[in-house]
Amino acid sequence: MGTPLGDFLRARRERLRPRDVGLAEYGRRRVKGLRREEVAMLAGMSTDYYVRLEQGREANPSPQVVAAVADALRLDAEPAEHLRRLVQAPEARRTPDAGVSPQLLRLMDGWTACPAFVLGPALDVLACNAPAAALYEGFEPADNLARMVFADPAGREFYRDWERAAHSCVAELRAAYGHDPRSERIGEVVADLSARSPEFAALWARHDVKAKTQDGKRLRHPVVGDLSILFSAFTVNGAPGQELVVYQAESDATAAAFGRLGERRVRVG
Image 1 (tube, rainbow, N blue to C red):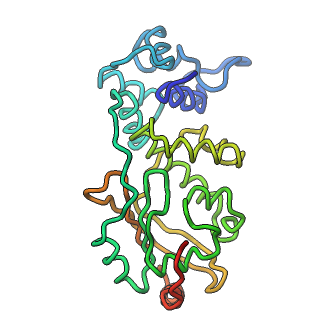
Image 2: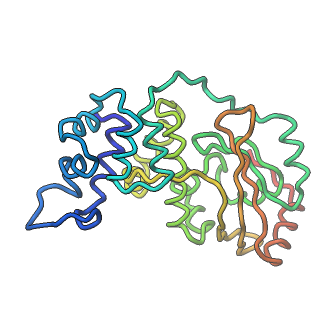
Image 3: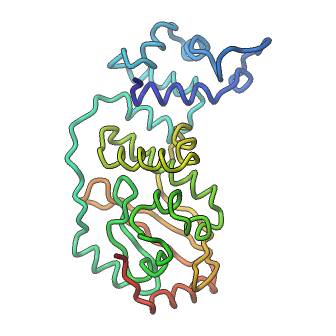
């Protein structure tokens, strides 16, 4: 059985070809991607040491070793930080409180034409204001973003760039997993969706990592039609693992549609 660190290293190693890292490639290769000895050479360490890392038998690699492996695997900033988190000794974590503070709920309710919702680490929708509830009214239920993307038929229509949404969703879930690989809730979501969606399972195996920050989305609501939005995500102080996500209209047409959503006052659940 693999370890979170070993699984990540193996997946990222298998995605690289020798030509990607400046190595010559001769004949037919028996392994997918780079060989372990090639990664070890690029990182300036012995093959035996790198093998111990992949197998979870090296418990405390130095920051210099981690940086060398990240460079060898051509990791950019966010996957490299994910790697650093995985090599740190895991700490016992208290299960995050699923409750959302009354102050934050009141703040969200004041945004009558701006969808806003709070996510837990496993992408559970913990709370949303009226425009957000109306935005997600086509889902049954609007309970978890990952499930909504991969397991609800409404997701294919709602996300106009479905493949992009799917990649982002899994990368965000993987980033949360890196903070707490022993999270029971994240494990439940991953196991459920891996069994129900081959597309989710394939993306999860890629070990892409990207936390939710800010970006654009193109959506299609069953009542108000096509929407072009910008979103920003904010960590919630005092509630570890919770994120506040706020949608803003990118066009006048979307702003008008948000206004109509606010008037619908549809409630989730």
